[in-house]
Amino acid sequence: MTGRIIEITTPGRSLHLDRGFLTIRENGKSVGRVPLDDIDAVIAATPGLYWSGNLLSALAQRSVAIVLIGQNFAPIAHILPLAAHHNQGNFMQAQAECSMPVKKRLWAQLIKAKIEAQAHVLSLAGQANERLNHLKTEVKSGDTTNREAAAAQYYWRHLMGHEFRRNRAEIGANALLNYGYTILRAATARAIVASGLNPSLSLHHASNGEALRLADDLMEPFRPTIDLTVYDLVKSGTTQLTPEVKAKLVAVLEVDFIMKNGHTPLSHALVRLAQSLAGVYLKEQTGLALPSPMRPVLDQLALGPHG
Image (cartoon, rainbow, N blue to C red):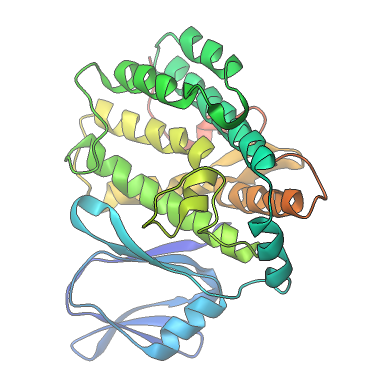
């Protein structure tokens, strides 16, 4: 069972630590409590929220990601612990010393997996995916010919329609995607930190102002799982980010993928992926641990019929 994602949306509430529980108070009265050990992330989606220092320390000790949400449900800040693994110093040193050829090889592996997942989503949507299958075979070390961008252009046009443009500032489907990616990103960042790695030292993403560049790298193959959920919601006429829609997007973290040792929830697959990356940095293995095939066990998504 994966941990819980706690979202706070009501202004004026305060969060406290109480005997191993995160306690939510409003006007001095408790309105909810959750065991700290059950929490994967806390999402603050409202202004005027108050936190106790003791609670923040307790969440950090458990590697719980704290995400601050800005306009249109896009994240503006993450809070992560500085030390979450007993061998973190050695891991981070090896991470910093990783050679460019190794980074390029790993990035190509991630992009091939992402395009494979996108192709599968298109097939479920009743769209032709031969173009994506071909683009996957053309991915070179470091994706120097940018097959990722070519795949994305084809993918979004055929999945969401020719008028759709992926834009974080837009409403509707874009807002749903923003929220789903925020959940995925928080889970990825937590997996990275728990594996002793620095989320700012990336394989490929290079935004100077972004502290979670490695999370943006590792989440790439799993983005299409969010896309598939949003596609189904939009197809059913749902474009508003209601509590029920948020719950469906959070539940994606519990969807099983087929890993080497059997079925694994997405959130745990992210941990195995991060741990395998640490193994590559330490030269204990050569490749990343990714699902094979790169697709979820679809009956757990509780989606409607496709095509």
